[in-house]
Length: 262
Length: 292
Image (cartoon, rainbow over all chains, first blue to last red; front, side, top):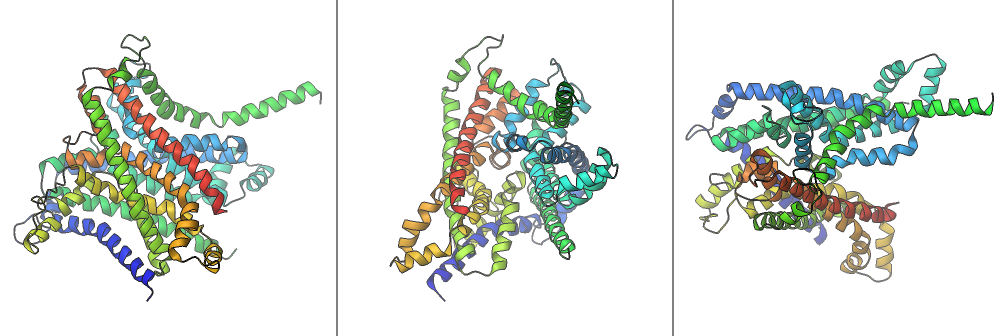
């Protein structure tokens, strides 16, 4: 074996140790709730906590709404920019990347000041209004990922030809978007949706500062008050993130196989 | 068709085209652009609407300066270490003769881990290196090493640095791998045929080509760490006063007794992450010249 190869294996092993030890440790820690033996007590305690259920369901519902509104905004825009306004592409892309530049805490600070009870659009004045604000906030956070996913999906098909063909057969814009573009970029949309889901479920800053009962603030509260339950929550959160990523991988691979014969 | 009517229909088409952008423009304006403008303008306003630089000058207060300095230190350190270890790992998986599936697995894992800044990450490190964490306990019981006695405290600067590296290293790996792939085999062969050894090849060919990528990613990692708040919040509570935690406390309860100082802190954050990202973008476009 060459020296460089040994060095590579050594580096890689160290990296594996650094990245897998915390995962293993979290799992081990979450099993320690009962003195002396491993048990799933911490999970039981978490799952039977009504607050867990409430915040978890709240975040799931929030994620679903965010996905729907995010896709409803991003898909037609990405399609439209590619079809009719290619000159705008760099500008739109720049805007979609801004949420990676402006820290989320600054964005939500802007929301609080801009949409307070004495403003022209007092969203934070009511629970529904705050929920809507939080949903759009999440859509903003996931915009860079969602837009890139959809735009990449659109790149693989010839939308101009498809659109012209559909139009010559008498299709309207609704038909074109729903029955032509959507099925063709479905995999890309689903990838973006799962990523959004993973982002929203664990998000903390927006929910905490808008004072909504989401899963992120609940986790932080547990971290300050319980010993073993936070580890169980972390394992649950890890599992959700990994499930989302695994689904994305699976979808991408599946679509590659489906397209292979053509 | 007369020229005037043609021009009119052309106008109609372009108006219709622009109409398609309205939902996105409205969304971006309301939830991204306007809130940011609100912050930027607010940083230069007095409570009754006049223009002032006092808020910015107020950033010079000792506790705020200390927070900015602390954030700078942790962002610079984790960006540097993230770049270093990320590069070493990327070199190992791309050109170290490791099997292909390990490379693919590393990249997939990095895609997840780089997005893993957050509350669970803090819990994972508490379970690993906290007072009752598995590594702490094993070191104490098996190797008789007392981490706390050796000066290590997870709820501190060094602990937060370790936790941040958990998402900084994977981000580096993700960005630098394509750049490493861009190093052409012929360059190495050419260097070797001219008599260069491995170290000389890296020092005089590979590193100069990679330099813009490395510096650019460093800037990106810096911005990445500077804006992060959830991990620090869950790990240290508010005992470690970095800028985002200071801002968080300010938004929650106006601890600084001056709402416009909050604008100034937020503005400073945008300015710092903005400059770092700008450096990243400029350097990346320079780096891409080599990747064609």
